[in-house]
Length: 148
Image 1 (cartoon, one colour):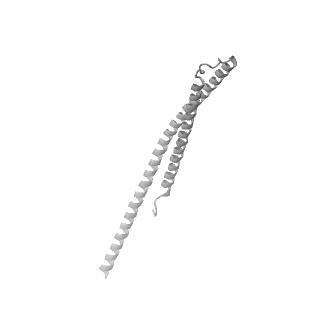
Image 2 (image 1 turned 120 degrees about the horizontal axis):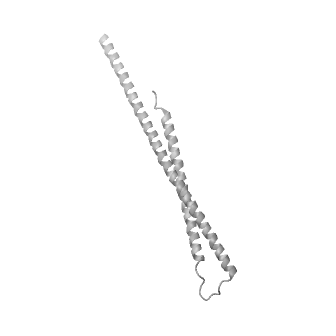
Image 3 (image 1 turned 90 degrees about the vertical axis):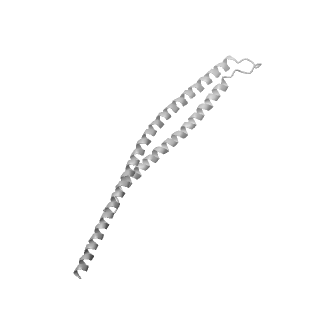
């Protein structure tokens, strides 16, 4: 055993890469959630502004304008529903990513513990080997002095 085994550190690095990848996915998801929420807020404001009654004193709306307003309101509601669906889907995906992150983090910690255990075993082996060499040298020196 001349050096600690590299396999554990390779596996630990691979586990760390997996954790980093999932953390990146979560960060992207948070950015997307903020963008979707901003879109939702903008659509909601547009919808509420569009539904405000016309100012008093203005001429009443014609039939075509009323139909156009209803159609536009329906389109805004459809867009709001779509954004809500996208947000719900994103939240589900982020929940799953958090589970995967916890699993990957456990795996990373396990691999890191194996790296540390292997390093401790290597150091113990090295100390034992060094002690044996020192003992052999001491016996050899004693025998040389006794023989002289």
